[in-house]
Image 1 (cartoon, rainbow, N blue to C red):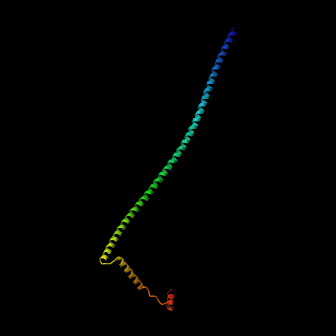
Image 2 (image 1 turned 60 degrees about the vertical axis):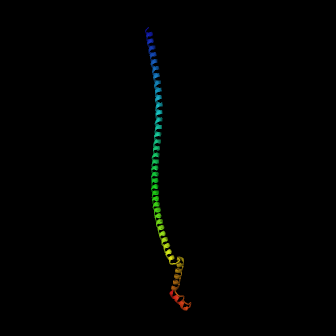
Image 3 (image 1 turned 135 degrees about the vertical axis):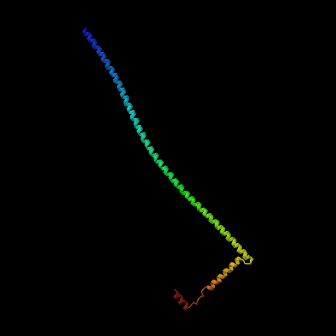
Length: 170
């Protein structure tokens, strides 16, 4: 019976060992599943990290592009302001020119009106004395022509003497 008790005890130990082995195998499979899940989580985290790095790089590129765009916009604004200042300067110069021209026209018009009035007054005064201005101008021109003719040097006879003097003058 001792052998039977030893056999029963051995069977019990084998059953316990088998149960412990089965429990260990179940735990090992659970650990493998946990490890596989952890590996999948690590891979997902790595993928998220890669996507985050790409997103950050893209954001930095976009930021750089935005900074460049802002700088260009500021340059365009500065150029527009300079163009505006130039245009305002041109407009002011044109306004001054128009003002000066208007003043000159007014002064010239006033002078012309004054001269016309003086001319009309002189013409009226001459008319009182029975003198026609156009006839007087024609007479003055005739007198000036006669004076010019009288002051002109007399023509010398065409002879050897005149040719010799002309050659000597040259």
